[in-house]
Length: 155
Image 1 (cartoon, rainbow, N blue to C red):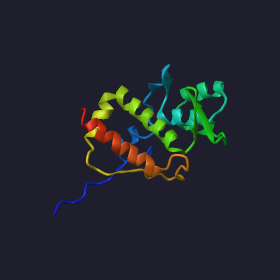
Image 2: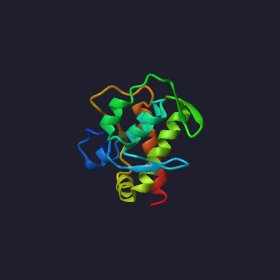
Image 3: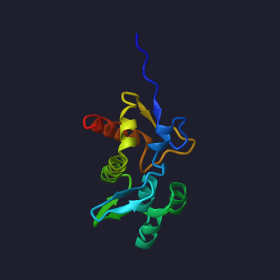
Image 4: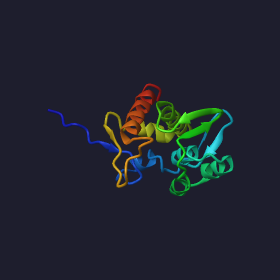
């Protein structure tokens, strides 16, 4: 009987390099949007969405992930992005984050290939901190699994 594959922890504290590189905290700059803006990391993008002030948003986009997380502490429940309003934590907000992760992978093809090579390992998100209510770990893992399957058919 075959053993189940070992889960892949996608987190900044992962014991595996690919797990850390796929984390939203990984320094994998990417461009995203209709008028592409450069984000230092997916976390920078995520935290930028939580800030209503446009000037502060541009600053957060350029910050390393840990710094962006500290800066993005707004208590807002909505985000405006490219003229559309998103309720933070909604399926539309989650889809926006998934699309940003897709952009990261498209712009880092070697990372995308190494990520696809982890298939069929289950993806988990185990961190020492509290799970995000706006973007829960189970949603993050489902999106990463979907993206890996999507890329597997392409790469």
